[in-house]
Amino acid sequence: MKFFVDTADIKEIKELNDLGLLDGVTTNPSLIMKSGGKITEVTKQICDIVEGPVSAEVTATDYDGMMQQAKVLSKIADNIAIKVPLTWDGLKACRSIRNDMDRMVNVTLCFSANQALLAAKAGATFISPFIGRIDDMGIDGVELISEIRTIYDNYDFKTEILAASIRTVNHVKEVAMIGADVATVPPATLKALVKHPLTDKGLEQFLADWAKTGQTIG
Ligand code: E4P
Image 1 (cartoon, rainbow, N blue to C red):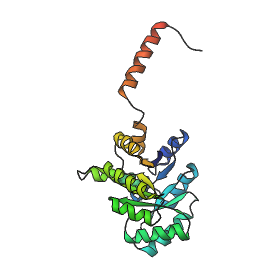
Image 2 (cartoon, rainbow, N blue to C red; image 1 turned 60 degrees about the vertical axis):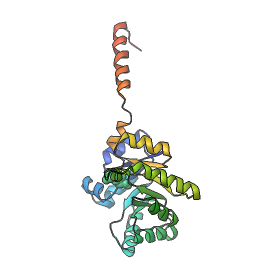
Image 3 (cartoon, rainbow, N blue to C red; image 1 turned 135 degrees about the vertical axis):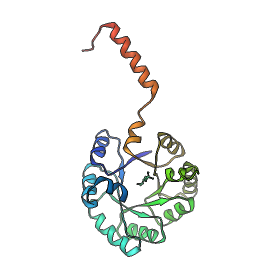
Image 4 (cartoon, protein in one colour; image 1 turned 90 degrees about the vertical axis):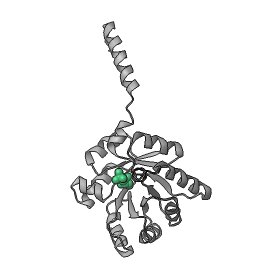
């Protein structure tokens, strides 16, 4: 499973990328707002750091507006994936961006398997089901990833399932077990994947015993 980081925080992106952990980045208007920067400038900075797909989201809601913004965003760098919402106009824009502009498209705000089916038919490069926001409604968001995996495998759709709105380390494990192609994970959750209390306890014991030997290495 590929790891994207879900942030527009340049410092975090650089740190994770230097570790070799990143296959891409996703942003959205809320994350750009948090970064405090201008969308074109922040996104350009991200694209200068990360080689993989960097999602930049349109904010227009009509087809013409989306296409006009997609042209602006696609000029930022070759690895930009244009992010469009899962609406009728968004699907039309997806089709045109794929066919006429030959750019990657990430169809976002997906909350049902039927929506994911439409996005695949429209030629989406990525579909972004928001599992955390479904969990917030008291429904199992991870189940949606499973449904989409089955449908895409049944018909051999090439659209990659990009599990989004990930809130916990358990989400990451579950979507990996189901076979999501990508998980886009907030930096804090990505870093939390390394933690295990038995690792900390074991290390503490080894260091205590090592101190008793009085030895040094090298
Ligand atoms: C994905 O592309 C979105 O940017 C993101 O995962 C949304 O997550 P949230 O529900 O935590 O805002």
